[in-house]
Every structure is written in C-alpha cells, then in structure tokens.
Image 1: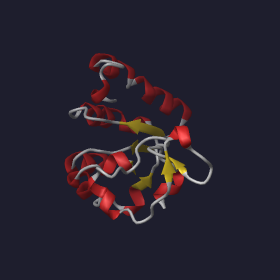
Image 2 (image 1 turned 135 degrees about the vertical axis):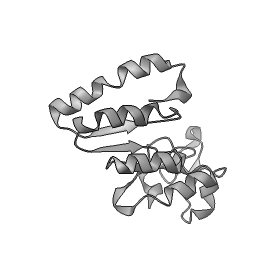
Image 3 (image 1 turned 60 degrees about the horizontal axis):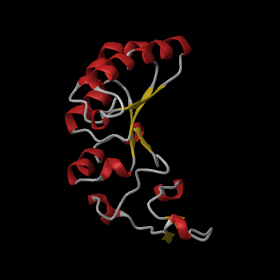
Length: 152
C-alpha cells in the first residue's frame, strides 16, 4: 500500500486490492513481500487481521516510525532497509533499532540509493565513480542508479 502515490491507485482501491493477496499467500504457502508507505495505520491493521494467513514476510523499503516498527516486529516480520529507509535522522534512528536477525539489506535497484542529501550519507565510506547515463561506460556506475555493490 502506498498513500504517497494515490494518483496510481486511490485509497479505496488499495484497501480493496490488498486483502486478496493474503488468500494467495495462504493457498501457496509462500511468504509475502510487502510495501507500505505513509498509510496512517491502515497497512498495519490489515496485516494484524490477516497475519495468520501467511508464513513469513518482509516489509520492504521501511520508512515508518518506532511504533510501526514495533508492531511489525511483534508480527514476526522482517524489515527491509535501503537508501529510501535512511533519508532522515529519524529514519536512521529507527533503522538502528531493527534487530540484526530481522533486517534485510535491499538495493531496490535501480532506485533507493543513498543520496548526498540523505542524513545517512555521512556514514557511507565506499564511493563509486559514476557518470550520467548518456555518458556511461563500463568502468563506472550510472549516476543516480542504485546497484547491489552499494550495500557492501
């Protein structure tokens, strides 16, 4: 669910479209890969009502607050962290409290890199040469494109 992108699907459409995914997870026994952005508690509430219908799950690109994190961890979910998860000081403080056995590092390639404007950028020690995609060559990365090597 993503309330920051209501131009793709409004709230009501998302509220209707999300619950059927639990039926699929229940039928297949497969884990769920979950997306949540700015849903004002709707996402967590739907998960609580349906948590017994799927075995495992990861909330990818987590950007929530400490209370939301506690709720997700209490439901035995994994937490995916990438550059979008580390934009602000609050994001970094919350991400630092995710237990190591519940954290998954993500690139969300080609998106969600740690940008120079992100609070977390000061912690990045490894830098890669990059060029605009129009000038790209194999000796460097495409500027603004996240790659798996950036999570080292």
